[in-house]
Image (tube, rainbow, N blue to C red; front, side, top):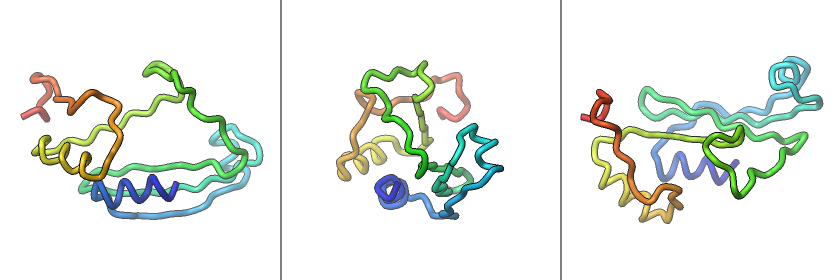
Length: 114
């Protein structure tokens, strides 16, 4: 979790909002996991927010190496930027590992693509 928080704050510029550990029957029912104990970190970038969750107990299984976008474990995050080349350079400078072959543009029909 600490490595992920550093990436989102140091590389992507998110601001910390909260960092809490949660447990108890309410969370067990919410998540459907008995004996649950989680660390939940909330971060903000402008008007957007992200919540990072780590199961401290019971520990989960690793994401399979061959996971695909239609698998339940697949996660996707998109951040809209005004200068994609600058953003891409910043990621490269911080040695971020890319899943995609390069920056992905929004389709022209998307109003945020402008």
